[in-house]
Image (cartoon, rainbow, N blue to C red):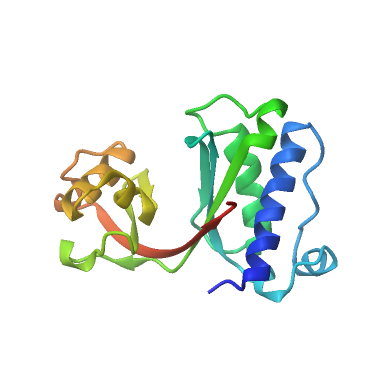
Length: 187
């Protein structure tokens, strides 16, 4: 569980990265544990982590990008994903300066991937899903199934579609994982 003060710092790092990206400025320095500590980020945020940054504008999705492979400090992952979510989500044009004050940022700090053997292994609202076959991979965060009112089967099928796979790919040899995520954001 991320400490409330760390949540505040992660959200601030995301907002600073978005502002820098939109303003054409260099990203805030979060190169590693040393830089993270000097920037006021403690060891909890310097640990390797995976996260997704979701940006909303007027209640509508405006961008969402994340990293699934642990290896970078969590604060750095959040900053990188925030910059990418506002500028490189292929579904949306880049965020503009006039939109900055109206953006709402949500972070999903991901837990470890666990294999799914049966649909009974999935708890809607608790688990997110990753499916992979060959070079195709799709991920849906836990909150997506709840927002859309999906049952387990629909959630898995939509994750398959997100990967560009047939909806029954999970029954045809694709690898399916679940994960938990700590989701928090600006209010």
